[in-house]
Length: 144
Image (cartoon, rainbow, N blue to C red; front, side, top):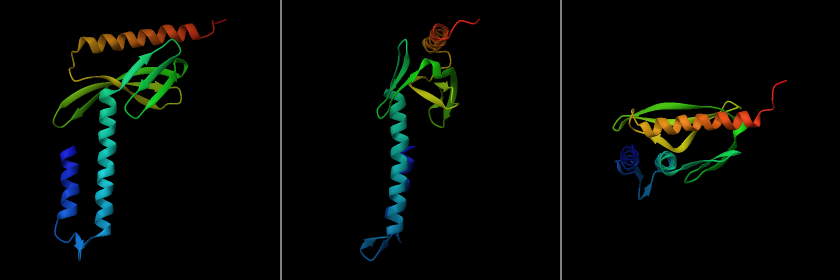
């Protein structure tokens, strides 16, 4: 993907007709900068998911990535979801998303696998759901 973006940006900049006199065409320059910014956002998101960490505490789930730091209270989390994604070259991989009470899902950094039968991933997901159930039960007021 990054090679594709780099190739498109280079082709747009260096193909014939991209220069007016000795100066680059300003419209093409803006297009190349737009492609480069889009590529940077995609790369930062990938790196954030790969090197990020998720830490559980009795009060919050702390999500930490390269450019992101969030702390979400357990009371806001409604469920965890295993999500399958596919890339053209690398094939399928699985991530975990947490769903919040406001309806907005969030992918948990550092919690992914490329193997469907990854027992450690399944065990960690089971532990995560069990921990959420025990913490939210402790937080809820008793029923009358």
